[in-house]
Structure formats: C-alpha cells, structure tokens
Image (cartoon, rainbow, N blue to C red; front, side, top):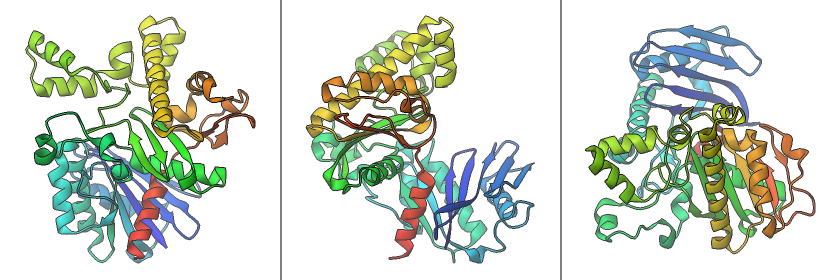
Amino acid sequence: MKIFVVNAGSSSLKYQLIDMDNESVLAKGLCERIGVTGAISHKAADGREYKTETPMPTHSEAFAAVVYAMMKSEAKVIDSFDEISAIGHRIVQGGAIFKGSCLVTDKVIEQISELGAMAPLHNPAHVIAIKACIKTFGDKIPQVVVFDTSFHQTMPPKAYMYALPYEYYERLAVRKYGAHGTSHHFVSDRVAVLENKDKKDLKIITCHLGNGCSITAVKDGVCADTSMGFTPLDGFMMGTRSGSLDPSALTYIAEKDNLSAADINTICNKKSGMLGVSGVSNDNRDVAAAAEAGNKRARLAIDMQRYQILKFIGSYIAAMNGVDAIAFTGGIGENDPELREYVCENLGYMGVKIDKEANKCRGKEIKISTEDSGVDIFVIPTNEELAIARDTLAIISK
C-alpha cells in the first residue's frame, strides 16, 4: 500500500511517496516558487533524480509537475494513480474543532479555511493545496488531513487556558493550541520503543528545536502541556519569533513608534528571535559562526535561547513531578551537541549524566546519556511524513 504525503505552503509543496508495507520512502521532492516561477526537485529511493524549472502559477501546476515526476520522468516510481491508496495532508491549525485526523470532505475543507485567521501563513495554503490535489488526483483516492494541533488536544484546561476574561475563550476560542504535534507524537512514541516500555508508564519531554521551536511534556501517554500557544509565536525565542514576552512591551513600542497591530505581528513573527537579537541571521549555524568569531550579540542570542529552553524543560519536570526521558529533535536539536550538553549539564540535580563522546553525533538516532544517568537522553530525528502516513492509513482502514 502506497500513501502520498503532502506538506504544502503558500509557495512550496513538499511531498513523499511511502510504501506502508515496510514504511520505506519510494520518492520525495519539493516544488518551489509556486506563484512566481516554479521549480521541482524529485528523487527516487534508488538515487535517480529529476529536476526542472517549469511555470507553476498555482498549486494545480505544482501537482501536475509532481505527477509527471512520479509517473513519467527518468525518476518515475509508479505507473498510475491506481497504485496510490490514499493521500495525507499536513495541516498546521485544527483549533478546537479537530481532535484528531479525519477524511477530507467539503465541510472539513470549509472548517480548515475558517481557522485561517489562527494560522494565516499556513491554513489558507493548505486549503488551496487540498483543492488542487483533488482536482489533480480526482475524488476516488481518499484524502486525509492530519493536524499539528491534534496531539495537544489532551491538555487539561489548567494548561491550555489563558488568564483573560473567560468570554474570549467562549466567544473567540482563545486558548493554547500548540504546534509541531505530529513531530512530538512521533518522537515520544519512538522514546517509548527505545525504552522498551509502555508510553503510558513514562514521563517524557520532547524538544523540537529548529527555526521554529517547541517543547512538550508527555505524561500518561498523552500531551500534558506544550510551549507554543494560541499561535506558534508563543514559547521561547526561535529563528525569527520572539517567543513569550510582556504584552506591555508591545503596547509601549506600538505607542512610541505609532505601529499598527499588523506591524507588531510582523516584528514578533518575522524580525525577532535569533535574527532580531543577533542582527546576523535566523539560521542557528550562521549565528553560531558569528559568536565563534567574537560577535557579542550573536553570543547573547545563543545564550538566551539555551537558557529559555532549559527553563521550559525545568518547568515541565516540575509539572510532571519528574521525568524519565528527554528527546532532542529538529534541525538544531539533532545537530547542535553544544546545546544538548548545556541542557544536560544544567540538569545535574536530576541525576542527568551525558556521554560526551556519544553526544558528538549529528542527525542520527542515539542515546547520549550514560547508563547510570538519572534520566535517559536521546537524539531522535523526527519523521513527520511517516507519522502523517501512519495516521492516514489508520483513518482509511477504519
């Protein structure tokens, strides 16, 4: 059984074709600059590649290019649509409406669209992609939507509610929703496998650290709390996002500089975080290189982010009354040994002991704590596409 996984943005379309009989990736690719010029890069599992620039005024043309790559190019992997059993879509925001993954219907598409204001950079693009996908593949292949927010729906009210007038929750559904749930779900499941224990018997903290970052507390097998909030802006500082801060600082800046709500939103989401503090880049590698060269603002940005990550981990240890395992994932989590060492060395009060030689790894699954460590520490590359494919298979198999 083959499942086609789609992760669409406003100007991009990432995809994988996965054989669920052995969960192997048959092909993967990326369409870029949709709506501008258009280009596709496609690679089959055996190394064959297909790359070309082609006009992609909309996502429909992008899907047409993907179909050609998979079925007719020199890197083809299937002969017809009949080989695709289902299509799974990654959706960022499911709000309070979607507790889990579900089949695509006209009503579901409409509801995803209605949630667009809560994920303006993502949900509208997802809707466009779903409609284009249906237009390309037809309505005979079942399509499933998998939400980044679903895994966090198990949070109790004490964790997801804000201390605002209650009417804003009742009338506008303002509450914490979280993000990166598909990744946190996959990684926490993987921790349980590596620990050879039932996930319900573990207290796990998963750290998804990349350009966007979030940390999740997993207790009794489900999400108990997570760092991102009403939107992915909340939590700790990221590549370009500020993370949590005093709202009065924003109203002060807005009044002093005569800025609109949209201006403030742009500043917090696109001009802050590592980029805003360092003045160098939103890319952790560039900021680290600048810090190494003596750039004090770059050093400050790194120190701030690591400190904030440590505080969130510590708060979740307190909230769960302990922790059995901590996992690092994402571009930074998987590839920054210095960050992992900093966190572990500051968790000595929990009996954490890091194997410094094992911690030198980058981008591979490994246990980096010593055998006598009080908490098991793992590096686990995330695989959101496989998680989406698994959910899609579960939905169509019901």
